[in-house]
Length: 196
Image 1 (cartoon, rainbow, N blue to C red):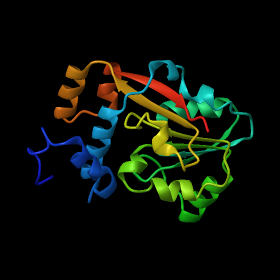
Image 2 (tube, rainbow, N blue to C red):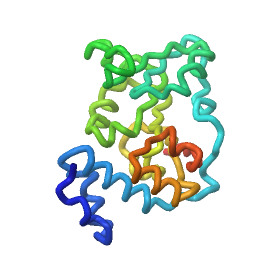
Image 3 (tube, rainbow, N blue to C red):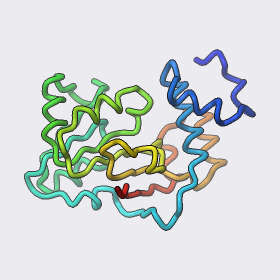
Image 4 (cartoon, rainbow, N blue to C red):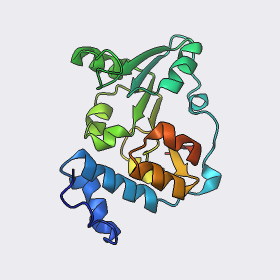
């Protein structure tokens, strides 16, 4: 619970954005990230709605490290013959890898799929610093900021995020505590390639 709740509406965006960098907890960082996403104006001609894994051109035997469980992608990735390792922090979702296995999976992967939740739980930098030299580094999830410039200086090559299609329904679902499954029908999922 945030003691400042009820005071954010009407705040200057620059003040709320600071939470993304200096937020003392995940809720503050989420407010900062939501503000950043609300301000991002990305050109529609740079986005595509096709399924995210089609960007990765996976080959049999390639190693994929998935940081955060993206359940809808698991079967699609395995169907290509790629070797998938899932790195998940929540023991209720999957068995947790040992720190050594996590480091090895990130160092050896050809493709890294990183949840944007790492931006909220302060593990993004740690995660990308453990990468070897994958040919694809995709930051994905509904909260992904669709602003390639934010990821300059990182190995990111792909952004997969969401754009609100029905703001009234999204606001209602969020205010009632709903998450991605309930939001999905009211979002448009898009992909951006980060060109260097």
